Image (cartoon, rainbow, N blue to C red; front, side, top):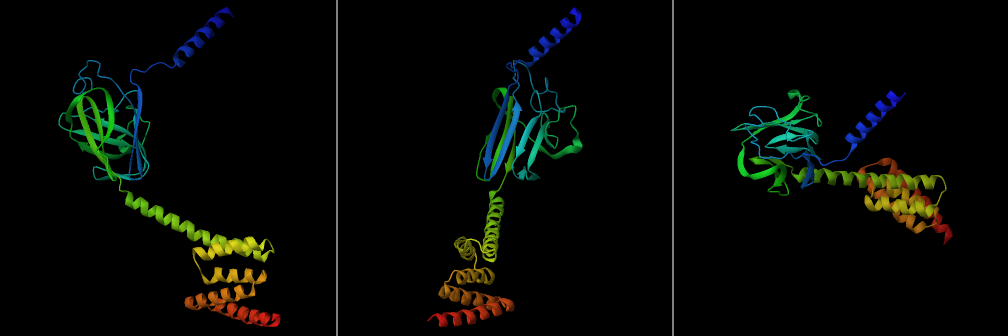
Length: 282
């Protein structure tokens, strides 16, 4: 029992030690930039130079690199973008690179949490080639956004005295057009919904004031012979004969323009009946 207690105590101490929140040699970082209507986010860890020769020594040329430390660098885009003229779909990707003296390969892998041992080239969504640049000395690896406009930005990676850069384009005009169409569709859907709600209240003898308010909203958004007809029925039921007749005439005219015979006849009947009803009241 004493031996078991000692083993359990050692295990608990070990867990507690590893569970401590201590400073990491390569701290986490995140940068985000909005380009037009697209959010570009990069989450990564920042290894230090620490007096070492990095490219061509610590990181051998023509060898796969996970482009960071601790875990895969995660690249997330909220919409489809173009990277160096190539399309990349919205989503999250891990960034892998193959550094070279004259050229780097940059891969965007569909496995956003892939480690170097889990990397599979067939899962690359996009591969590009870029030229390395000599840059100011950077102790800790750093991603940054450069030359930001409404339509594009350059993503730059600096470490030691080397930098690479690739362009991300995200033209907001297409997204803006889609947003406009979506909002218009909502409005168009709303006028039908207002009409059906008003008709339900009318047919089921519910609050006619509310039914009329919904009916007017439907007509204000988009006057059609069928929703104008609904409004005429509600007005008549509320005792507004003059208003009902005027609205019925309007519905009839719209039905004639649409060449919709059923509603032409419905309105003609109501106009005749309500005109007779008005004469009786005089």
